[in-house]
Length: 508
Image 1 (tube, one colour):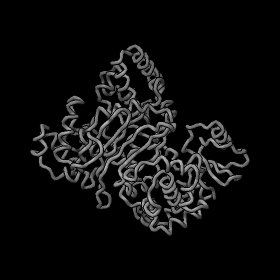
Image 2: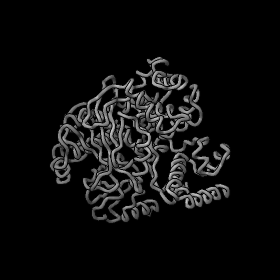
Image 3: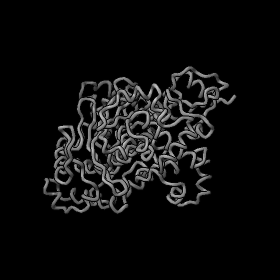
Image 4: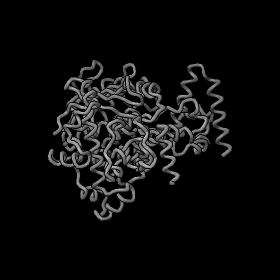
């Protein structure tokens, strides 16, 4: 018996959420494939086959389980995705708005032949590129059919199918039912009954627990941009203004913990954004770190994470927006940076009507900011050097010289950022932490990090952090959080944890 598969079977029996997204179980007696956390009756071992990806399970002839819904499974960690050239390229194309790109277009994007692409897909994904892309699009459609009131035609186009006929054919061939019949299933009817008014769309996002939502939402609340984003109780709300393939999409969205479903967030967005749902969900997955694997990270961080393994790495919805906020925050208080960022957004952003009193501005795009003069930016009370840095960053992004997407190569992006006057190692690594969502970014000159480690030498701080690779950005979040615990009167507890952490590092 394959020992790894036996391990997988035991994980399935115990519904171990650490393995969610890492493998799927094809059940021969039912013809469906499930997530490890599925709560249906556990199948017999001899009826189970294990697959690393949903695409491989579907290629083998299995249909997705309607109970555990494989399309909701959290993805693998971002740094693993960055090592997978094929998946990274697929996401890059989708983020550009090319949801329905062809296999030849993917090969051209990778600058390889279709034959080599076929070999690469078999090596990295265990199936052909066409099968992988079809599974990705069908699961996306299944999610939208289950959770939204959007028309089948709209869902077909959003999911990457060129026509309704093509969508219906593939859906029926793979899943043995029609898109409309899926909506008649009990679970879908229940979801539809809870749907919001037709002017909004609601969707679900899931993650691996534990998840310290309060810590993350507090971090974001302290760094919001007035008029653009707002935190109310445990809910994050923001405006959206995105240009996708030359078309402008404007609206708003809200995300918060689901009241009735464990390990689930619920997203509500204006119907005006329906056409770019895949892009929006991906941005939220990065901003709220929904791909994280807490057990893997906390094991590497040791005693630093022992009291709160649920601390996440806050990403950003828009890399340029977040980077401008970071530059404005250099050497001033968080409150002062909040004020300046709000002025900047109101001066150069676009007004928008939303149902929320605190949301009325879309943050200006890099293209807009690149056309500004230093005097225009400086007139807001921003020093000229920072104004120049912001404009230079905008120009770099507009020209394609700098990428602030999570699929970008982190070291190359950091090097490009540091070439700009006004961006040093701290700012570059902070941007890498949040805009690129790079889990190994480490601003070793950060005063808070050094204070938490009781260290005054940046080089020694860098040395101490070696043990935490490749999760040093998470270590930063834990160190910053320890300072917050200090303010709450937990100095003794923090000191004990830091001392133990340093001892662990020195032993290595």
